[in-house]
Image (tube, rainbow, N blue to C red):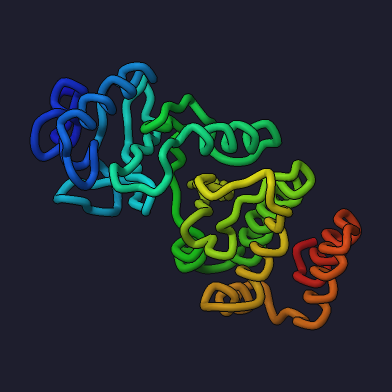
Length: 257
């Protein structure tokens, strides 16, 4: 690990360029020290600045209005670490950790490995966003691969709806769903989740995938045309409470069976 130039042990995080990212965007020394203590509490020994995005010349896995997601080292494994931004409107990541644990209990989301006010440790899932994954598909077998990914993904939404957990961001699933290297779709980022709102995971994701935007056009190119009126009827029936039957009917309309 010492030969990895992107690897920063906790002892280095109080220094530039890491300090500003650990307490993004201010780099406030007190905030940096608080986050280092929380990383240590979660048994994280280093941060590994790799990823597709750049923040202050450091590579990261993700960046949002609440936090920065970086790769971390815990024991002998790589994990995903979300560090709360100093300027975030959310005062803590604890509620997000609780919602992620709830999702885990029904087989959804990356495994929660622990959370504090400013740090959330999670299973690291290597893969592509839904749009990038679709673009990567070539040759024969594309339709079968899409079916194998999309149907279980929608099943995850049904489980969350039944549990009463609303993700809140699946109408923008390009940011919140990743397809792993073995074609397994995982729902990420539960910072906007709620058990108070009426859940609409299945309808939100189905509309995103098949009824609007560029990704719906890509789905049609792979799976074939969708009867829009029939799909809308299925979604209305789902909202009315006939979850199991409407889910099966939706699969038929979408050609996922």
